[in-house]
Amino acid sequence: MKEIKDFTVIERVQYGDMYFALTLQHPGVMQPVMPGQFVEVEVPGVREVMLRRPISVHDVCQESNQLTLLIQIVGKGTRRLSEMKVGDKLNLVYPLGKGFSVEGERPLLVGGGAGIAPLLHLSKCYNARGIRPTILLGGRTASLIPARQLLEPLGELLLCTDDGSLGEHGMVTQHTRFGADYDHICTCGPTPMMRAVARHALSKGIDCELSLENMMACGIGACLCCVCDTDNGHKCVCKDGPVFNANELTKWISL
Ligand SMILES: Cc1cc2nc3c(=O)[nH]c(=O)nc-3n(C[C@H](O)[C@H](O)[C@H](O)COP(=O)(O)OP(=O)(O)OC[C@H]3O[C@@H](n4cnc5c(N)ncnc54)[C@H](O)[C@@H]3O)c2cc1C
Ligand code: FES
Image (tube, rainbow, N blue to C red; front, side, top):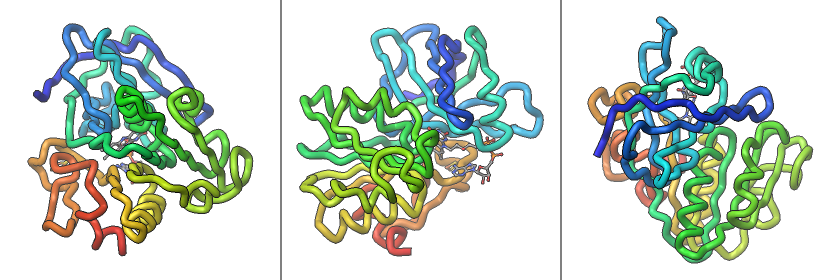
């Protein structure tokens, strides 16, 4: 069930200049949050930022009613959120959208940029099934692969950077382990990266899920500003996604 709630910031962690994480405490009992679901965050005190901002759930502690967001500073809204301090309140609508299925026995999780965010909760859900996923993260340079140390204990962590400053030199699809024997692929990040990953999965017959990050406003399927042209017609990324199976997005993937 969706809920609108004031959460309290209980921890703030900075990752380089561009990324930060906020851990938020629910005042009571938090709704269950599936990996790949997102929240709509109200940005306090900025007149120009009227719309809530969609942010994936990075981590969840259901027992202590806490969730964590990993955020990249790209504009006024995320800049203001980066100024939040321990004790401040943030109003969230959550949990939103449809998440990852957590299927497969040999999963590969591929993330780039802010698309790394949902992979922590997703990896923990695989661990709960007794599975250590392969986690492949890519970025332009080392400082743009945030929170990687949190993923290390949860699976086999593979890294690559465009400038070679961390892990293998090149893009995720050029990583020497990218073409290994996986039976399920989940990907979240820049559109060209997700398209390349999904094209590979489709060509090999590997089940694949993509988390789209279309621009959003309402976050609940009312304004139609996030519509994606899927193989099954127009769908709201906020309500019918953000996670879609590649079989549903073959037209989008081939663009
Ligand atoms: C389902 C979903 C989950 C997301 N999860 C995360 C997350 O976990 N962490 C995170 O850092 N970001 C995430 N994003 C992206 C985040 O919502 C945007 O970066 C944020 O809304 C930008 O707000 P702003 O006011 O700072 O920037 P604005 O001033 O609104 O825009 C600044 C720049 O960012 C671009 N931008 C804005 N929104 C998006 C978007 N959705 N995708 C790509 N570019 C955008 C604009 O075109 C502009 O160039 C997610 C988006 C969606 C739809
Ligand atoms: S954001 Fe309004 S319909 Fe998706």
